[in-house]
Image (cartoon, rainbow, N blue to C red; front, side):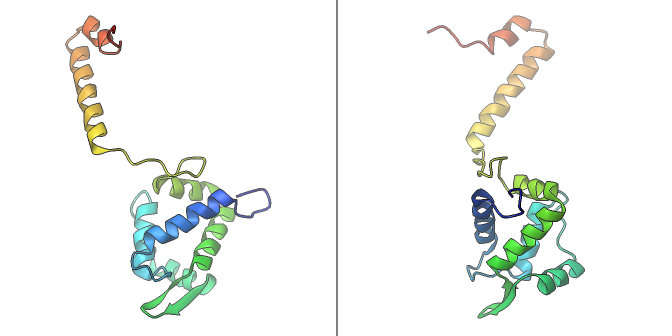
Length: 147
């Protein structure tokens, strides 16, 4: 957000991407189930919105009936996040970080399982060398071989 409580373009892009990510059925509305999935993903303890919170979302933000049921519109989603950000900006940043965004509101690349496995194997190797007291081998593991 900028200094006058307006959404920056990067923040809007992130919110639109998140809305689309959780709009699993593609009906342009976030149903209660989709909002609860979002809540689980955004909260560190995987907590779902309580019934009272769901009622507040329906009462205070743009909620519409659609062909497949009712849900929060994109406008309502933006209203919800603007309200949260104005009240507790740090909570918005925590949500965005948990949902894959960095401090510049860019999606962080998901780690590849292969790269993660290779890093884990290298770490295990280094730990074993360190625990065995093999200082030279431990140091050599960090130095690139001469070409």
